Image (cartoon, rainbow, N blue to C red; front, side, top):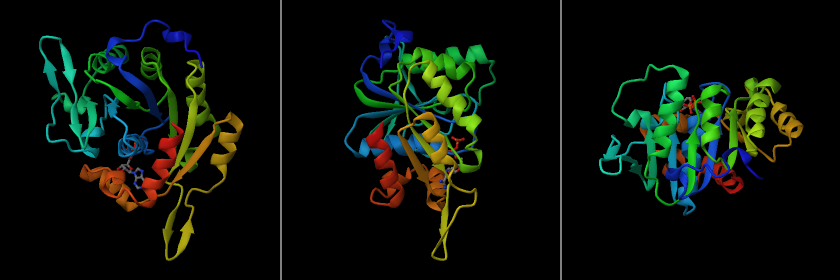
Length: 257
Ligand code: ADP
């Protein structure tokens, strides 16, 4: 679809990137960063050149979820650009790699810092840049979406919070910007124990919502101790177990972005 918002204004740092995917959620703690990181490593496993931009200034997760050898971003002093760090071939930029403590900033300042970090990074040629969006649909998110020519958005939610109004907010923000929402990931939807499957938060609401909004894909991501353990260990689950069930779900998601 046409994107009149950014016509002719594509920031230079982003011109060598083919697809920019936003991973977004209305609330914190629903698994947005888990989905962003595992999606990125799945795309890399499929042979794509991939970067992750962790846009969460207040609570950057990327430094916990991946453990690159070099945990600090470097500057190119001549070009005044930022050189991403890298882990298993994926380029990484996060405030958590910027060598400062947790940021205390007001909204407009945050937007400026995010945009600067994103657009002055030397991403090089990438097939996909996955942006782990800050949670919510406020000014910071809106400004970011206006600066960046997003190709697609993935919305992450949990079943009990898959309230109509929550997902609607996310879809509305992206549709205002003419960014297609290609998938909803319903995280922590079930777990298996004693040979049975349990749906602790109920079921059925996900398919209702995607139908209502015409979103083409819905993915159920189960509760898995290995997912939280890998998130804490710095080795993404899909890279640690590329043949596993979770990796298969992310491969399907990878295909639809
Ligand atoms: P958000 O980015 O939305 O704040 P995170 O991705 O940081 O959420 O996830 C919050 C916590 O829940 C993390 O510790 C993560 O490892 C864990 N987690 C997320 N999804 C799952 C899952 N499907 N199974 C088990 N643990 C999960």
